[in-house]
Each structure stands twice: as structure tokens, then as C-alpha cells.
Image 1 (cartoon, rainbow over the protein chains, first blue to last red):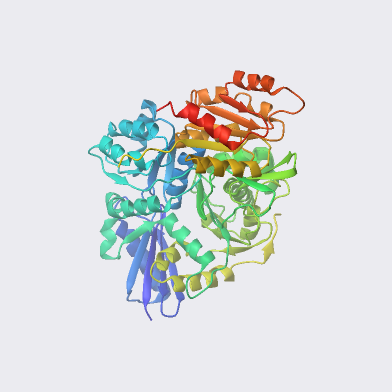
Image 2: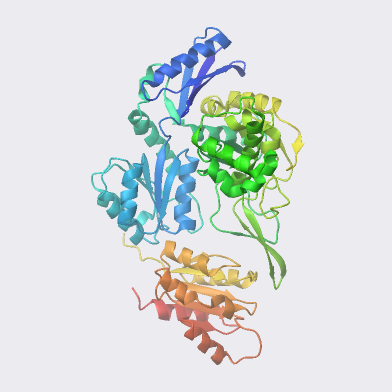
Length: 467
Length: 141
């Protein structure tokens, strides 16, 4: 037996997972409140005690941790054209597990600078222009940023012709030069920038956020939590050398403030008469809907779905649903706890959150008629052939309706041009192990894959269709 | 060290037009002639040409249209370029840009009035366009 401890310091809960890497078995899971304000190791110690009650006394061989505590990894990005380099910067940051607070395009203004100073990002990502292309914008932005107070590091990943000049303009600041996120028009190259974001996270952010006190207990906090989740999902889909994965998938995590959607799939057009438009999207793509969440962002769900649809789905009258939504938006810690009306409302809210967030993540098809007949224009990823939907996160797991809610991620006849899975089975991360398995995968990919397959499939279901 | 920067062209077939063959021929002809070509392919909107030209700091935009709706599709292109900060970036257009029996001199006049620098009639040899590009671009630095 060789036990390994995996810890996820979340914004609210510190989640612990113990595994035995020799037998590829899950030994136990436990959680406790995150105590980042005082000493983060208090929560960890409490969690360890709970875990021990489940697993018995264990001598851990190794331990790894990820974190989204203390506001996560807060980033601001700036690019040139919104749909091109600015979008590439956002995709790169989200994929690296960051929380993108704001994305600017074109030239930064004085007002923008004031806003950035207020946001106080952990990292700023400055891009713009293809290699040898536009340089004015990124130079202007570097000049503007150099005047800004605050010590956050800046990654420069734009037109390589002026990378050094940007660095000089930024003077005393901490600057990291990376390969261009869009070296040629329409070509996305985000891996070097993502590696740089992770390195900075390790070297600086973890320390700055008071997360290092735990280093006595842990080998290290090695990545932001969303990055661990994405890594786990990639492993689950693709497999590793010794074992095959389960194939293309999407994953949904509806939280209190945001909803994360992941897709591991190529997503390029399948039909011969389909033309792809816009920036190609990454194979492993993560999006975060900052306005879709069960409590803090409850209004965003209402705005996206409409109060009529929500109340109908919940079986409540509109005024009653409105009153309850008012209450939940201010009392964000309320949970149904047996209350039937609130259970039904939460079901409706979660369903509509999945619908909206996956709708924005998935690509769309547009039908046009040309002189050569019917043609389709695709933007974004075609996920219609994806056969698996992974569900994670408290609001989807702590309900008996998980499958019905998750099925909202699928093809909906009312939105026929949204490229969502047509037939898929639902896999449920009941014990919330995805982030832990992402951490484990860095050293023990096969063990992580075996455990994930076992856990997710045992709580999975047969094929579903959109209700 | 100072390598001369290749002139950058943004190329594509405008509108709901899926004629892909001529587009490929032009792509190869322009590349062979020493241009760096950003080929947007078929069914390109005005906004796509402009976005590509901004990011790549393009020297010219070359628009093809083969299905007869070119005049409609190209309307407002110059104004949009100016609005996007591309100013007087050279705009060239060619193909079967209008339908019906019209004298090309008339058609050309209308496109020049729309702010295009050159308009080419059907069946133009790519070399003619390349020659025109040199005339327009070689003087500029």
C-alpha cells in the first residue's frame, strides 16, 4: 500500500482525497471549511481528522494540492481585435485555470487603466498582432501599463517583432516573454503562455496568497484547481500509454457564482458542405460564465432563461418564484434542506444554468443558400457527436435530479443550430474527485484514470436525451 | 539581420460565395510571387477581411467574387476600413463581380467610386493582378 493525499483548497471548502496508488483505489474523501483568512492549515488539519475517521491512520507517501482559494487566479487580458487575439488571450488564460476578470481589445485608455488598478489582477496578459503584423497596439498598451502602479507580473505574448520593445517599455516591472498566442492569422498557440501562467502561479501567487504555510504538510500547491480539473478530463478522454480513455466528452460545473464548462473534443466541421469561420478553438477548452450561478449570479440565469420558463419548470407561480429568487440572491447560503418549493426552484435554476452555459460554450451552425445550394457556416466547436457528459460541482451533485439537469446540456429541438451532443450518457462525479485526479495524473496517470473510470461510471447513467 | 518584410495580402471570396478553386489558384500565384498571403477562403464577410488585416498589419486586401453579387457584398467596405483604422489600405476586387451584360468600364467606374483601388474583369490572369499589386505597393514603404 502506498497512500497519496490530494488536497483542493476551494473558496469555501478544502476537499481531501486519499488514494492508494499501488492498488489504484480510492481510500476516502473528506472536506472542511477553507480557512484562508486565518491560517489555511487549520482547515486542512480539520479535514485530515475527518478523513482519518474514514480511512484509518495513514502514512502518506506523497501529497499534492491545487487551489482556487483567496479569489482564485485573477487575470486581466488585452488583445487587438476582439474575435482574434483578444479571444486567444482569454482562451489561453481560462485553459490555464485562471479567472478572467476583464478582457480589453484595441488600445487601452486611461479609464481602462483606472479599472485595472481597481481589479488588481494577479497576472496581466498582454497580446496583440500576428508575428510581423500589427505592433502599434501592443506597444501603446505596454506604454500605458508601464505607468500603472501595482506589482502584478505581465506576460507579453503578442507580435514577436516587438516583444523586447514591450519589455523595455515596461521597465521595472516583472515581465515574462512568451510565444505569440496567434503567431499567424487564425492559428492558436496557447500552450507556452499557459505554461508561463502556471509557473508564475507556483512561484509567486501561492506565496502572495498565504498558501505556503501548508508546505510543511504538502509537497506543494502545484496548480490552480480548474487547471487540475481540465487535466483530469483530458486524461479521462484521451487515456494514457497503458490504458485507453473514454473518448470525447464535455463537463459541466454549476457553482454559486459561476458555471464552468469544459470540452475535450476536436469539434471541427464534419459535413463537407460546412465552412468553419472564426478563430479555431482549443481541443481542451474551458469557458466560465461569470453571470450564471445558483446564488450570487442567480439573476443571470433569470436573464438568460426568463422567469416564465423557470417558474414553469419549477411548477411555481411567477410571483412566488420571483420572491424566492429575491431571497436567494441576498441569502446566498440558503439550501433547500427539505423545502419542496425551493428544491423544485433549484432544479429549474440548475437546468437553465446548464442550458445557458453549454449553449454559450458549444459552437453554432448557420444555414445559408448559395449558388451551389445549401451550405452551413460553423462557428465554435461542433460537439454534436460527443457521447459523454461529466457532471461535477455541489449544485448538481447534491440533488436526486442530476441526470435530468445534466440532460439540458444536450441537443434541444428548440435550438437546432446549437451544436450540442445528440446522444450521450451522463457521468457523475459524486465524490468530487476530478481536481484530485488531475493532481494525481501528473505522477500517476494510469492510477488516476482507473479511479476516475470506476467512480464516474458507477454513478453514471444510460443514454439520455434533452427532456 | 534586417530581412525585408514580405508584403502581406488578405485574400478571400466575399459573401455567400463558395467558389473555392479560383481562390486556391490566387493563393498559390500570390505566394509564388513573394507575397505573404492570409487566405480566408470562401464565404468571407467584410468584417473578417478587416479583422485579419488589422492583426496582420496587411498591405492590401484582395477580394474575389464569382457569383454575381459582388457589388452588393462590397458596398461600404471602404467606409468600414476607414472606421476600423485601416484608412486607405489598397482594396482590389475581381472575378464575376456583377451579373448581366454590362460594359466593364462602367462596372469598374462604380467600384472605383466605392473606394476600391482596382477592379478586374472576368478571366483576368493572376499575373495582371500581381503587376497591379506591385504598382500600388512598391512605391509605399
